[in-house]
Image (cartoon, rainbow, N blue to C red; front, side, top):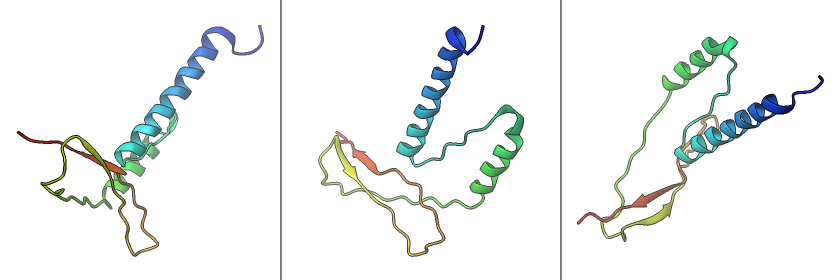
Length: 97
């Protein structure tokens, strides 16, 4: 029999769907998605370790007067063109009672 058909085709589709989900999750959370084959996991882990050595965390406190359960957009900018910024594009306020 030629081609992938049956199980192989469904598996490829599941893998593609999973990769797309992980990419969207990384984009939404401000993270990064690494795609790796089992044969090059060491290379991928080395890339992750190197990136973790050069990260900064930025935090802020939103205005307490903001309404609860409201989605707010945000954008992080820097003046250095050699920097890569990965950050969430939104946050949600929660009203504390």
